Each structure stands twice: as structure tokens, then as C-alpha cells.
Image 1 (cartoon, protein in one colour):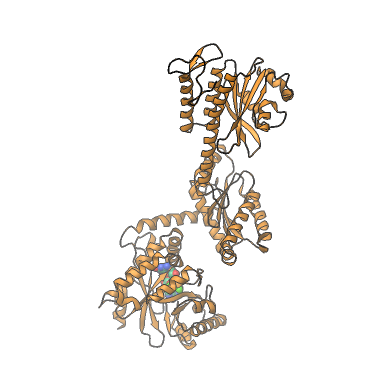
Image 2 (spheres, helix red, strand yellow):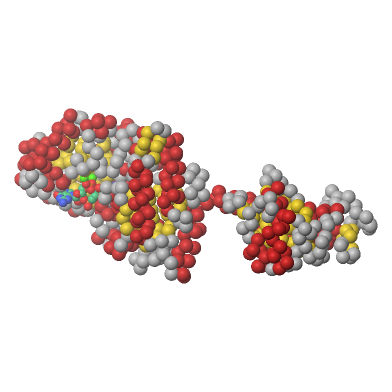
Length: 631
Ligand code: C2E
Ligand code: CA
Ligand code: CA
């Protein structure tokens, strides 16, 4: 007898209805069987838990072969064991006993069936050597005969599980039994295959392809659960944020393929040192987040072992490389930790930044002070995002740049001030740092630049005849859209272009051969001037200066401040000026506060300067008054 659409009509079929001879002598129609099948398929298609679908199948199988007890085990290739699947009338204790069964040549009929990947029939378990080790179990659960059928994947023929049927009496398998068993085994295979597909899909959505670590989505899904569990059960929870220090350099030196290989190697080390229970995710390019159910002390110890391991023995091709990282760790259960998981990651990230700005290759652990600062900064970021909705959120201030010889004003540097009363109390440097961190810098920078062009375009206007310096962050230069914005302004206000100078800070690494370098050259090509800000504090070198198209360098006020009192600073001022000159650039001394400083600088050969000596930065109206007063 065969069952199903392509089946052969069984004996005793009535018009338009297949009839099956049930073992209890009752007659049941194919329709009943199809009903059951529909029920199971509905469970599968609405993603019911696998155990529910498999148990329904086991129950149905029992109703077709009276006296039979159905049991479905799931094959788990990762562990090499058979796992609890679905059960009909067998009690939970049986499921527990059998869970974890390892297939073998003498492991009952189910274990042997999985081992051989073929059907195994034991008509009498007490006579069958396969069952020798399981007599007690058989007596306990009244098992006399056992039929075990492998569940096979339709896609590739691999093992999915085992469908076992147990009878309290010695019971051979008839052809009809076989057809029914095949039918139920087929349904069970479908259910497991579907479940595996879903699991595979879920895995792909929550894991990083390159490293096979979790991804951000996994963190978003799992992190809050971990936090909830730790809070309700009172366990430890620590979150670490790791950021590789020198990945960019390694990537640039060895190329992206090797860079990818390195990330894979790092991922392996993370797995090795984070412990079995940690949740590890790749957060961004070379950033990782690890969630531990352990104390901060324990985590620190693990991170130090990891540090040693990474510093010693990673090879790219035949070359050993030292991988270093900065890490931030937060005790998620401490009072100072953020309220939700996202905030805790933000705090750990902030601590990693701190570790990096302290020189890198170290771990910073969040404490009350750091957490408070972090909260202030997130508050600041929110406040800025909100304030920027207003069209007049920004009030540029102006500070004159003068000729040291004649005292004549040549131009102004535009400096950011926020109109919002709370934000105006925060130092501009801090506002800029937060804006860079949150990405608001693009909006801020665009508005400052628009103001500058529009202001100079007023002719006659308050700043006719002067040039304007506008500060630009390296973050802005990383974005090609910035070039389009500048182009747009150049087209709208072509007459003012030669009087606009962009100041770029040197303290942030600006790669002359990278995209930011290209962008600077493009901007220069549009006719704008370029200044290198805070010269002397960053990566100044002759080759650096020569490879970027700056017109001017601005000597950092740190050296200017001590030019009279400290001979070393005086020497640096001389050297920096010589460096600028040799590259054909002019120099501006920043932060000049006194007349005598101005005199010394003039003596050293400086011709332009800026500082409180002439004026503090002031709003436009005060700038106009100041200019009038000087005239
Ligand atoms: P900066 O570009 O080096 O600007 C010069 C800073 O030195 C200004 O601080 C100015 O007020 C201060 N300063 C000028 N003369 C003296 C002096 O004689 N003595 C002392 N002690 N300080 C003097 P401010 O306005 O607080 O700005 C700080 C930093 O914030 C700026 O440093 C710049 O890096 C950044 N910044 C300001 N506005 C913008 C902007 O619109 N965009 C970007 N990306 N950065 C900006
Ligand atoms: Ca500046
Ligand atoms: Ca500066």
C-alpha cells in the first residue's frame, strides 16, 4: 500500500475516496490522513516550535497504529548527538533519558539507525543484541518491538533525525505499516528541514560573514535579554568594546585581503580568550563588542591575556605583525551604567576612545566619574541635535588676523558658537568633538560655510575687503558630499571664492594619499585657500607639508604662548616658520596675547598673527563696531 497523491488505490477503495485499512479493523479514509497532514503543515508553515510540530506527528502516527508509541529524535551534527524532538504518549522522562544519545553500532534501534543511516527493525528488543544495554529502559517504558526509520534531507540526503515507533508486544512491520511510517517520517523530515532553513536564515541575519562572529543585530537582539536576565537573577554582566589600534596601517601596508585575514585571526583569538559563555560580535570594521556574564576584574584579566596573545603571534603571510587594541569595559550592573543596553555599549565605546586617546594599547574601565562625563556628553549630543533644528542655531564669532608689521586687519577666523543658552556655556572644542562623534559635524560645518560665503557676498558689506577662515573637520573631508556642497557654494558666489580659506586641523590624522587628501586637492582646484591649523601639535613633517596643497600654516598657540619664556618653544617657532617657508607657505602665529609676544614673533620673521592681543572672538555686530573704532 502507498499513500499520497501518487499512490496506488488500496484494497476496498470506495468511489472517489481512498480507504486505508487501519490496524484496529476500523476503516479510515485518506481524507482523515490528509486532514492530519494539513494540520502538521499548518504548524510548520506558521513556524510553530519544532517540538510542537514533531509531537503532533508522533501523536498522529500513534492514532494510526494502535498500541504504538511514536518518538522523533533530531540529529545535531555540531555535537554528534541525537536530541529530544517530539513525543506522542511517551512520558517526558523517556525524552530526557534518550536526549543526547550518541549513534553507534549497538545503540538500540534509533542510535543504530542513525549510525547506519538506514531503517532498523527490532521485532523483539529482548532478543536483539542492539538492545542489550537498554533492557531496563525497555521494561520501564513497556517496549517490546522497535522500528526506527532515518529522517533524510530531501536536498542532500543528509541525516536529519530518527523516527522511532515502539510497541508493547512483539510486532513485525507489515507493508501497510511501512507505508504509514514512511508518510510520517516524510512529514517529520519536512518539519526539521524547514526549521533548519529558518535557523540558517536567522544565523545569516545575525552573524558577520567574514569573521562568523555575531553582528550588531545579534547584539541588539541578545544584549537586552542578557541585561534583563542579569538584573532579574542578580548575576554579573560586563560589556567590553575593543577597537584595534593599528588596523588601518596594517590594511594599508598589507592590502585588504590580508587585512580581512587579520580580522579573522583576531576573531579566533577573541573566541579563545573570551570564554565559552561570552557573546562576541563584530561591531564595525575593526571594532568588536563582547558581553560577559563575569565580573569586570575577570574580564580585565581575560583582556590582558588576549593582549599578550595578539601582540606576540599573528602572522600575515610569513610576516609577524603585532596587533594592539584599545578597550573600554563597563560593569553593566553598576549604578552608573546606562539604563539600556545601547547606552551601555555607548559607554564602553567612549571608554575605548579614552583608552585610545591615552596612547592606545590599553583598557579603560568605566567608573562613576567617567560615566557622569559620558552622560553629560550624550545629553550634549541630544541638545545639539535638537538645537540644530532651528535655522539660527549657530552664531558665528569672528577673530581678526592682523599683519604684525602694520597692525592692519587682513581677515577673520570664523569660530562656532551655539545660540542655545545651555549649549553656549559648553566650550566650542567640546561641541565640535561631540559633533564629530555623532556626525552632526556635517550639518554644523555646512552651515558655517554657507554663512561665510553669504557674508562675503554682501558687497558692500561689513567684511568687504577681508578674507574669512572657516574651520573644517577631517571628518567632513572624509565625505565626498562635502565637495558637492563646496561646489554648490562656489557656483552661487563665484566672486568670493578667492577670499575663503578652509582651516583643517592637523591633530587629526589626515592621510595625504587617502580620500581626504584627494578632496583637499579638489577643493584647492576650485580656487579656495587652505590653511593647516594647530601646526606643530600633530603629524608635521616636511613631506607631509609638501604633499598637501596648503597656502598657510597656523602655528599652535601652545608654542606662541611660551615664545618669550621658554627657549625651546622659541626654537620650535623658528623651525616651524622655516618649514612653512621652505614649502612656499605663509605662517600665522595663533594665540598672541601680549604686545611683547607680538614683538618677539615679528623679530623671528612672522608677519601675521591672531590672538587676544588684538581681540577675542566676537559676534558680527561687535566685529563691525571694532572695525569702525580702529578706523
Ligand atoms: P582653533 O581653530 O585653533 O581656534 C582658535 C581658538 O583659540 C579659539 O577657541 C579662540 O577663541 C582661541 N584663541 C584665540 N586667541 C587666543 C588667545 O590669545 N589666547 C587663548 N588662550 N586662546 C585664544 P574656540 O573658539 O574656543 O575654538 C576652539 C576650537 O574649536 C577651535 O580651535 C577649532 O578647532 C574648533 N572650532 C571652532 N569653530 C569650529 C567650526 O566651525 N568648525 C570646526 N570644525 N571646528 C571649530
Ligand atoms: Ca582654526
Ligand atoms: Ca588653531
